[in-house]
Length: 438
Image (cartoon, rainbow, N blue to C red; front, side, top):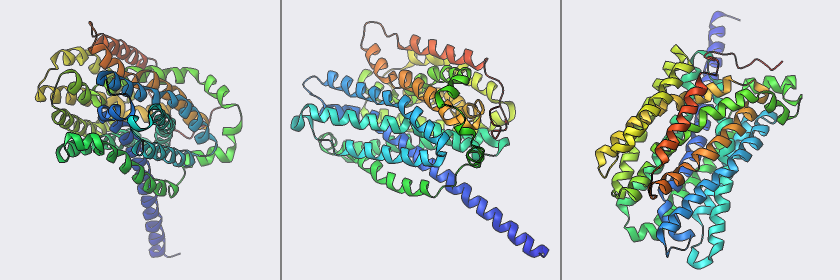
């Protein structure tokens, strides 16, 4: 073969590799975006959902019921994490991701078509509950599978940066949801929003899921998984036994997650609704504060990822968790019925939390061998998010309406646990993810 032919072959191979990388990144990004979009629009439109799915004679009770269903959706997450983790380790990361987006889209469609409480009574509430459980099952499997897949296809020296794509794409989905909510708030009257406008985001999510399904069917499987499948290493032992064998890493996933997920849901997800319902701020203003705060989060994520590739995972995790812990109470005391105060507090907390969020996918993947990686991450991570993140908006709203608002103390105590857990994990920057468990 001539040198020209060799260069041409090399160029074709390089171009094919770039196309594969783009397909994988877009497939992961779009699916993750839609999962988070679907999850967030529920919180953004909780007030309207409450009026249609529950008895609205007592609006506060109806809102708390809608937020309770938001939390109930998280109950399915550990089951989804375990099920899709098993699928990801046995059948492939790609197969697990494809199945997850199908379920998530079905849940969105069910909410979009949900009949009113005045028409169907308790059946309407039941339909909403089942749709949220389906979405919880899908999301419980989506995130760990996408975390593992992206970490395994990333270059070792830039895994922290690539890892940030999970929360960049996910937060972009949240941003789209907030932007759509803000636009609908401007374009439609309150009566129109309450009548049909709140259904639009869920219908759009269901339709977009079909395109994402096409993208994921054309993704290339992780080479790490293909090597595991060839060696049959993922069929050696019972999956529960494998997770138990790596129980320390599983406990570290839980410890790292609980404080950071509560802070994340309180500030990046529920803050606009909280400011509207508890501080009396204008709904449109709170939504725009959420939009800008999430833009700050997106911008900070890759910067933290790059920093972790240079100085390590542990320093970045400590800065993020420790900083959020120190500033949590001052930021809470500062909150009041003022747009700039809300915007600055959400932006500051989001930028700090971005440090941990950016590198969690890489760090978690680096704690487990490939044959048990999605299962090892899936169940403990989903459990922590379900038990603490999913209940955070409900507890935050309930505590604020009680005689003593204990939520900041609760969140800070969990952040202490996350910060302490950082000291127990090894530095994993640049670890070889192909190493099988022995």
